[in-house]
Length: 340
Image (tube, rainbow, N blue to C red; front, side, top):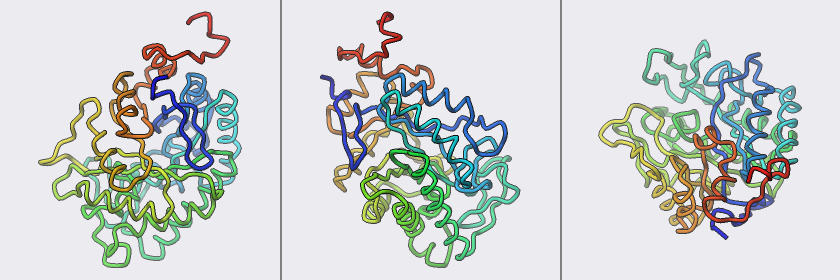
């Protein structure tokens, strides 16, 4: 049995293999109401049929102005629960577990009339506005919104929740010295906002449901943080209740002297460093589409799970084809068995 196809368990989440569908925005909420529609149903259910053990639904926002665009998903209302539950039930029916990535875009909210952020520093690019700095009380209310969104995710039947603390979105903005210039407690302690969000979300989750967080292990902008800062953030986040760290990098601004690798597996060393430093399960992500490479990441112990992004956009049946390539006994839907 290839290591990629061994089961993995964390808390109540029992996965049949080590393949995760990475969350990737579809920008397809045509009604602009935050509710998933037939596109999302087909998109995510197809990857469950294709054999992914864990499907993570794209960045789903805690308030309307927290969306990257008005075409993004949301969990700011109880009206969102039923449309998500439809997708959850379908994915369960095809043997996959399913999670949702809860987030707020902060200063990267392109369609908000006035975006909000830890500090009034605009993201680079003509489509981005100068954000308004959140007051201390507003930050506390934002924490509550994350908790309320998590409560709705649990009601929809999700198996796990992931917080988006990477790629320059709101949690990342608070944890970075580049974007957090505050003088209150949320500026004096760069992990505080993330810690409080984790605590609020965990308080709404069943005790054995694992919480994931996606983090940028390094920033590429000049003056950005490095892996040591990320490890310390993850230490605080683990103590607050995070069970699994999904390790990415960058997204906070234009790269300076430090450049992203942009070759297959370039982020895997970050995942291994966090795993070894904190003895916490990690998900590796980033150009891991080659079957042998994904297998080697698990076999070598670099990570516990691999998240496949663009590879699963190109091929909904990536896990089945990986099993073929690695000589694993296929678990193909009976309707498709004649093709294999």
